[in-house]
Image 1: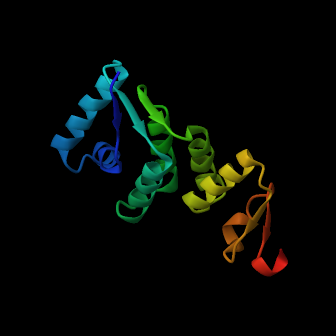
Image 2: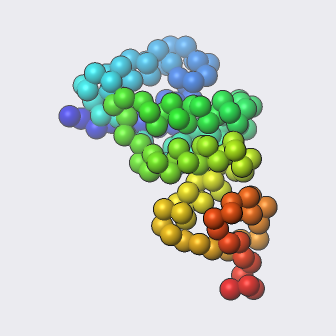
Amino acid sequence: MTQVFADTNLFLRYFTNDVPEQADQVDGLLQAAKNREIQLVTTAMVIAEVVWTLNSFYKLSREDIRDRVLAIVNTPGLLVADANLLVEAAINYVNKNVDFIDAYNVAWMKKSKVEKACTFDRKHFLRFDEITVVSPDEI
């Protein structure tokens, strides 16, 4: 089966329908993946860009963005790298009110058994009880 990389703009066109012709093309692509005619693949970086664009340009709520991330991860025929981390990040993006990237990094830390985060931007990391936040001079 042919693997096809799905880039950020495909998801954005599909979710926003701001270019209906392109949204329809994406719908056809998703149907082909669902029917196992092709295998779509994408990365966590693509999902991060989707989140950033839906937030900064389209001004969607965190809940709407979370729901779209979960929809991507659960799309039949689409393989998403680090899907389990993205699900956890999407949930914590809403529940902990943190940046999506910070939520993803904490999910990765937990999976990798990394217990300390060294940062000057402590605010969001401190919302996670399962990690310790330190600055460089505390190491």
